[in-house]
Length: 112
Image 1: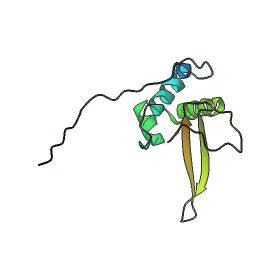
Image 2: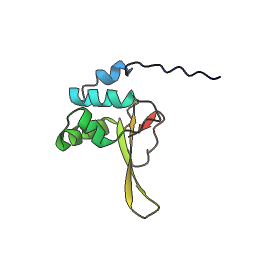
Image 3: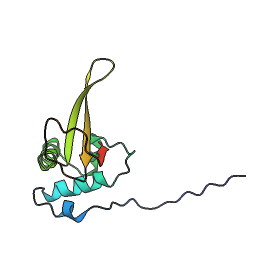
Image 4: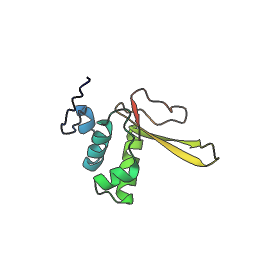
């Protein structure tokens, strides 16, 4: 007979201090980035869910995304589905990298 133990605990995030202290980012952006980085690598984050969770308007999300992108924490790649439609893959990393056209695969990234 197999027994399963389910552990119930509150979710938490561990974030590097330099992310919390990065003055290039607003407080709102630091919180959103910290939350995203705290998810497990297999956790699929949807932008609509982030906006709902943090009560962000489209303009607020775009501003946060722009800050993360300019600081090198966020980037996106355009892909094409099998049906020929354009799709976007979003990546967030805890190691900021300078944005560049040839740099599309950060080492420590989580797909958003």
